[in-house]
Image (cartoon, rainbow, N blue to C red; front, side, top):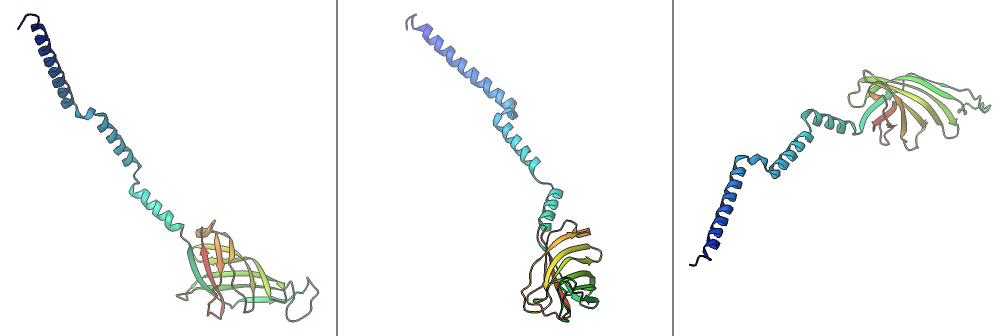
Amino acid sequence: MTSSQRPRGVSAQRAVAGVAGLALALAACSSVNPTSSPTRAAGSARAESAASQAPTASQAAVRASAATASQPQTIHVLEPARNYTQVSVGSLTGCTTTNGCQGDYILGDDSLLDATTKQVVGTLLFECFRVDAGSTLFHCPGNTITLTGRGRIVYAEDVHFTAGYAPDNWPITGGSGEFLGATGFVTSPADSTYTDGGDFVITITG
């Protein structure tokens, strides 16, 4: 080997040694602090974020309660017609027939029974005005159902006091207690077999 070749060999050996030393140094650094990895840090941050966004047990209970509350609620009651008065006035048309005149009205105060247990659960107050003598159509602007210990439901009703007319949905216009701000309607079942008075299904939709 000539002297001109030796420096190249020495330089190559030094270069190899330098690369090996650098590799050992990098390996030592990575083994000393494994948590400093950007990938691991990002993964940890995502896990902490997911944990903070996960609902607690109380939050889950509130959401479940809200979902249940949003479901329509129905209340089925019966009204034995016992305490009502029909008044014939005929003052709107000068009508004198005994069959009924426009402007006649019916008012009353009856107990309400649970449709299943037949136990008294409240009262119904009503005042209805005859608007069409020929079809016995009455308008009741503010019927009030009071359910004991729960609150009141006010609804408007247009009703025929004779058979042969399809039931209608009468809108709930107000309420109190449990029914404060309630929306929905009241109707009478088309297949009702109750003949002692009113048969009402109250549907609370919101």
